[in-house]
Image (cartoon, rainbow, N blue to C red):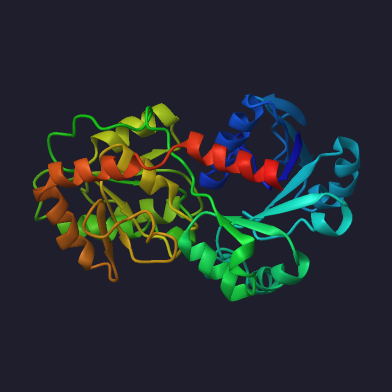
Length: 353
């Protein structure tokens, strides 16, 4: 079988995140099962145009517009048995209109909730209208999504429930595993430093707790447009906050494993891969109760979901006081997920489509 997967980024993109991790982990496993797996994506100018990445035959086209214009030519050239249109960045690929092939649509989350503050008003409005047009663009196609929230979003757009299949992401349970914690409580934020993820709230949480918790430390891992703003917030203050930038997966796993609590502030998520990675590391999460996270944070079990920033204080203190209990719960919850399970579900879907 030959699969062609359209997406806007791949795992080597400088801004890759959870969406690209899913493509990579699923794609390389499908390739190992004998599927000829092609990924067509945007080239940010510093990567090879054609590359085999662990079995994923990657085709990179320069320009966000050009990759869409080249789609028809690429389909003719590769001649796949089935196409996956990945809507990880909202813009549809329209493969069902021109390819004559079977097309599966991968819907991550509703971007209308996360666009404000990230792009200008006109672009946000245009992308929101595109999302509302999904039922017209993909009239009969099967949709894959990751969470119950995203499934509800699709239904609200007009996609019938029987056309939706949920396939949650996995987690590397060997890389992300429990271990010794730091001597004094350490909080970690890791992920993209983008407006809709509200990473600047990390400083507020530190300020709420610094007089309550002896030698409290905050570690912020990641990069993005909000980084300078956060650094300016702590400039000149004697806060025990470390900015680590983008680090290797191995270093990330160590930092998360050693931390006592993972904190998460997103306006919305499709799933919250970082939360499952944190749980696998035996590190519970305190996060806002927002769409996408009700499947990854079981309130009171592997962390807490709150409605206001002020509520983070008491929930984090609760976790610190009962660290061993929440750590064990977190790992137990994460063991329900694996990339092998995720890839196997995709394999069955592709073969039955």
